[in-house]
Image 1: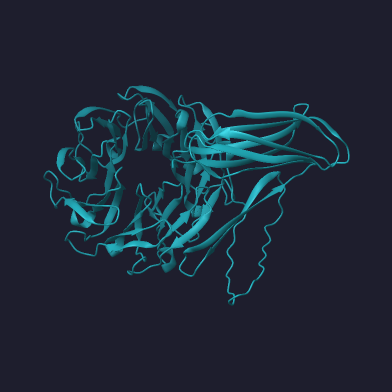
Image 2: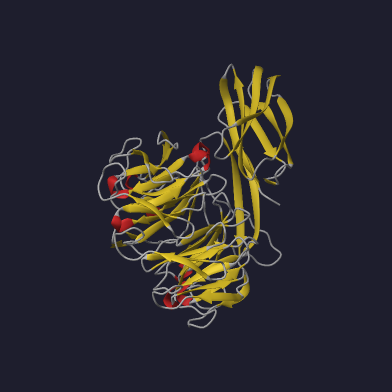
Length: 548
């Protein structure tokens, strides 16, 4: 599926100023997606947009301003473990915290200044496993730490080049052991979660542990830190405490050489994947930097690229690459074998204009930043879910009255289960109520209808699927086979149920089956009715498994 941010937005690309774009994205514990957005010419564009896990619009909060719940260039966004939404309100020099309904839960924290809780152009933001919030206070050359309600805990950093000092820090990350890594002034510094300096590494230069624009950072499963040293055309590897382990790469197009390496990702087995941007290829290394393989060349065929930018590793070791100037996403296995591709130039569902950023959620969903279409698209491999129609209606009704509203969604010429979802919001963009209505489209005489008793389950919980098969034809149907398969996104399908039966003309065959919810993630259900190994109808639905 996709969702449109709804404003004309821009970005920086290739040295040409194109304006501002959706700035950051975070996923809440319930799967909700929150996007910060800035529009340079429309005050309504300074906002936070909330979507459900399928990309359906839920709410928009904020407008340009300095009041509570207003923003001026909201940049970073993070969601704490208890669901609080933390927004870096950049030009207001403050942090605002919202609940999942968009209400300000702490009036604000921060104003322009250099005292505790004040900011000068806060940029990067990260949250720890305990819900703590870390903010890069760039203009004040420091890091500030808050609890999830915005209460000041501590700060560290002053302008300078000494230990614990910064010159306009930008990037920040929290490691699995709660250590905090900060990229600033040609070096990496590591702190504990209270800001106590642990170690540093790096200076400007070309030697071991030196950088010329440290760009991408990835942390392997063993805690090793990999840094893309972009203008030195190499990768450097460090231990968790910053000790130099090794480096590889030089300018060129040979194996293990780079021409402006950009994206970097570490797989679950420790393999390191790098987008070698100007060489139009992907290179794979082991955790020690030994060249394993490469794939790609300039072109438009399967496995070829034109300026690949983003790279991400999914479950099962699948590698997803944003093939930017080919307007598509390509999927490979961990050995670089082409698996699938989707997308082409355009504005329709599953089409792109310069896809650049790519990320994978824990449930295996693939999120793509579709830059020039001003939107984000979510895909689940061949189980891609799409929004086929979306509209907004302005409503004004007198008290104690009812009114019908109609909208023409156009022709539907595919067999599928659809969900009509509506959201009623007030003038502040806050959600008042929501509803969902399922309906089906069929092209033949065999009809398959089914529903799960819930849309969200906890691991191990029993789910019930009920439905029926109908024969709307004028002749009897014999030896029909009903099958159900379940598939956790990112994994292979499992046979859940099978049944063979006859169905007279105009008849109905009800069924009920149960299943046990497994691990956390999105589960795709696929029901099909076949005869003589020929599929008559196939319907897909899905449900979520979440921790209680």
